[in-house]
Amino acid sequence: MASKTGVEEPQQTEKAAPAAAYSAGLEGVPVAKSKLCRIDGMQGKLYYMGYPIEDLASASSFEETAFLLWHGRLPKQDELDVLESELRRNRALPQQAVDFISMLPHTAQPMDVLRTMTSLLSSFDQNPERSPESNLHRAIAITARFPTIMATFHRLRQNQKPVEPNPKLGHAANFLYMLFGKEPDEATARVMDMALILHLDHEMNASTFAALVTASTLSDLYSAVSSGVGALKGPLHGGANEEVLKMLLQIGDATNVETFVDDALAKKIKISGFGHRVYKNYDPRARILKEYARRLSEKTKFSRFFDITDRLEAAMVARKGKQGIFPNVDLYSGIVYHQIGIATDLFTPIFAIARVAGWTAHVLEYWEKNRIFRPASIYDGPEPRTYTPMSQR
Ligand code: ACO
Image (tube, rainbow, N blue to C red; front, top):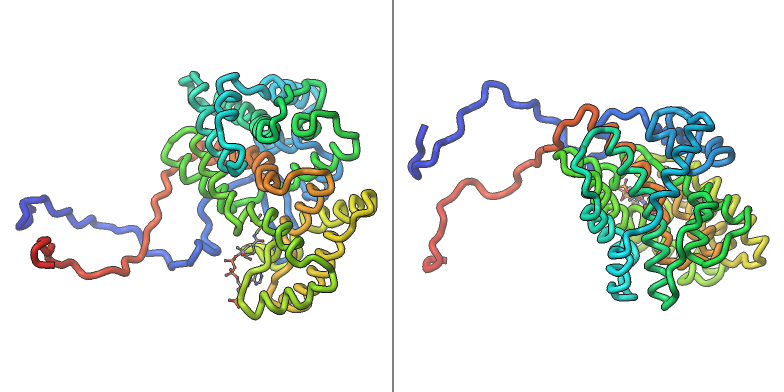
């Protein structure tokens, strides 16, 4: 039927989709089915493909856990060897990409650099094939390059020459090698490997959802990963680990903790490193990281940050525990990275270096039964009205 304006009016469809209840921030709304990761927020438990995070953190490696999520099972030795060698082969960046990084301002935020370089790398991928298999190889190549992007930028911004990847080293150890220009000792490499495992996946969080929304339009894997990096950057999500360190500097000394907490809570300021949409108990990753933070602080004989955080935890749990607010993964990760000597603005990129494997695993899984994300909003604006010409406004 034509309207007064001559534009076809839409036909009434016979069956509209049922209206779902509105939930701010999609709280409690399932948006996908996934086998990859399960959180029991009340018990404070986390599983990747059914394996408890504690077991993976103590016994697995980043490469093996990435295989688990990409393939849905633990690898045999020869399968792990193949994945490791593919990751190693793909670590180096094209020279033009290194040149591009060298043109960026030294003051650029590392997460912005990572997002930009993810987009840039898509220009070097000339393979038109979009099969699940080629997308898996793409996921491996992107994952392999994330540490190189960050280490290259970090070296260049300090007027140092980038360090070529070392094919003898594993993913975590090689990242530290490219960052510092010397091989890490075994214990330090192991701590980094464990931190990457802990951050590798986390069910339907904001950045994974952002990656899936982009992927659901059948856009490409680079675009999906760029969306994930952009979402992770925010201080309510992955950016919280950097905020924690700034907060520790602000608190200055463990004796100031209670005053700081009471003041922040009175002003309704959220304290970084606490609270979670799903966990209403201690985040199991925080427990693991706390132990490493403690051990490293004892080893380096620098325990000020650990002491402040430990007391902060006690103060927050005493005041907000009843509300289900407990430490999350970001509370202790920063102390661990700081003890290893990593610059604060690389903390969130390290999160991304791990999570890229999770994002891509979720995207590959979602594409098996893809449906475009097209939710709804509740209209809260004016009723239809007549356009006012400029002269009458
Ligand atoms: N400090 C103080 N109060 C808090 C905190 C906190 N960190 N987190 C939640 N609350 C309070 C809120 O003020 C609110 O209280 P009210 O009901 O009295 O108003 C209640 O708990 C619920 O908080 P919401 O913000 O509605 O919870 P939501 O699920 O939307 O947010 C989030 C979760 C973003 C993680 C929140 O807890 C927060 O901002 N934490 C600090 C930032 C942080 O550490 N982020 C990292 C999360 S883990 C990750 O993404 C890797």
